[in-house]
Amino acid sequence: MAWAEKRGNLWRARWHAPDGSVPSKPGFKTRKAAEKYGQAQEAAADNGTYVDPRAGRITLIEWVNEWCPAQDLEPTTLVNYKYAIEVHILPKFGSWALSDITAEEVGKWEREIMAQGFARRTARDARTTLTTILNDAIPRHIKVNPAARKRGKGRKGQRRIEHHEQAEKVWATPLQVLLTSERLAALTGRDEDFLMGITDGYTGMRWSEVSGLSPDYVLPDYMQGDALDIQWKLYELGGHFYRGRPKDGSIRPADLPPFLAELLAWHKTQIKGRRCTCRKFDKSTGPASGTTWCTGAEYVFLSPGGGHYRRSTYGERYFHPAADGWYPERSHRSARPVLIDTSAPFPGQPLAAWPAAVRGEEFVPPTGRGVARFVSDPETARCAACRRALPRRLDGLVISHKSNGDRCPGSGQVPGEDLAVASWAPIIKGLTPHGLRHGLKVWMDEDQIADVLKSERLGHDEPGMRGVYGHVSPAMREELKTALQARWEESLRQRAALSPVSAVPLLNRLLAGIRPASNPARSRLAPKIGHRQRRNANRRSPDTL
Image 1 (tube, rainbow, N blue to C red):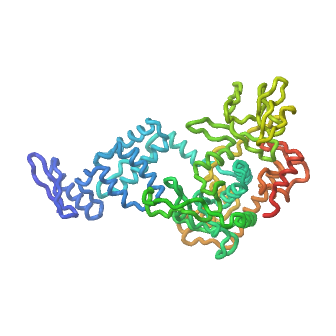
Image 2 (image 1 turned 45 degrees about the vertical axis):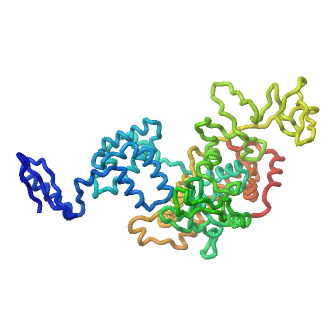
Image 3 (image 1 turned 90 degrees about the vertical axis):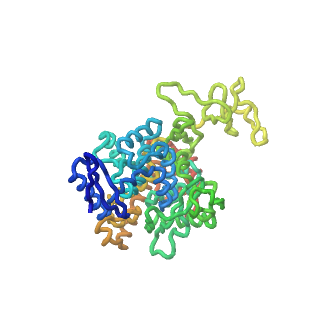
């Protein structure tokens, strides 16, 4: 039982700690106050919330060294924690005792990170990491977490903006998914990227799950009906890729509408025996020793070189240009529009990017070696025979030159016509691969699909009693497949109204059966297509799926 001791004009509280020691705290003006404090400490020891006053003197770096080895998390999560700890947290609070860290100091530190030029999200993520670290120090070392954000605190306007941005996550309609996927294939020159975009949009798989999809789990024999079996994901870490189970263990089936089952079955025949280019390496030097690294296996979707697409690279080079119509801004260059040759079938043949024109300013094309020219000027023209941009003679004809080892008759001809150059209009600005998951959720809401099936489709847990007693029936699965098939067929009709042909051979084949008999509706997205281009597009189409 706690007691008090007289020390001069003040009193000191004494009590029995859980480890058998007898701590003390001086400075009380009355005996009753000292005894009350000691009794509160013994009550905390009884209910498991006791904090030794001496425990808070451990420094943050000592606690981090004790905390980190005990974490069992995804390798990518550990790498993100390591960055925040080493770059932001320890340089500020590493030598501080846990009990000395206050909410005021944490708030000041968060603002200092932004003042150094880091993004607001970087500062917020660093504070979240610190909050996670200090949460595990309760109640052993500290009573409360000084890094935890209090409800109702902070800039109200900023919280409203963040809430609005989260609520207004960009999502895509079926037609927008189709158009974006078509542009992906136009940029890469492969049917595979068109199919990858459609598969992502209609299954709701995460990017890592699409990257890690194995042919063995596409229409597997052990599953009834047409479905994917989402068993694995593929993450990039330290320049290499590793396999792991889906996020939160969300292993699940993804029922396929008939059109997608047919396309994926055809694609499997085209990639039979194809393996990625990953090879063995010294795993002991990697950031996560013991991780199941990819050392070469069969995957449904790979890059043109046979490797795995890297999320950031794919977004910068393909996905964002396809959805936005612009290559994103980077530190070494400004944003650039996607230029296309409109003489090719819809959506046009992508060309090398030029700088963007500025309204009200005269546009000056770039010059120098290696710069592609799409239009003539007083000094250069395009050869009609080899399509190269060459200097003009004084009489305006192209100067004699060689092409592929043979002399080109360009000097005897009038310069060829300039390319019909245009730029892509945005399909939907700000769309990301993750936004396709949001779009699928909206489609299922509109089609009144059962909540339990929607949660399964997206790899989420159904909360409460619905998750305990809810089950997915075969009738629910058929309803979902029917709804997705109807949306696909309607999007194809809408796409055919823009242009009856496509530069993507696979889509061109799909459009063949539903091309409108009358003149198609014109659109700002659709360049004019001549009879010759339409005939050439038909020749490039695959005969069968």
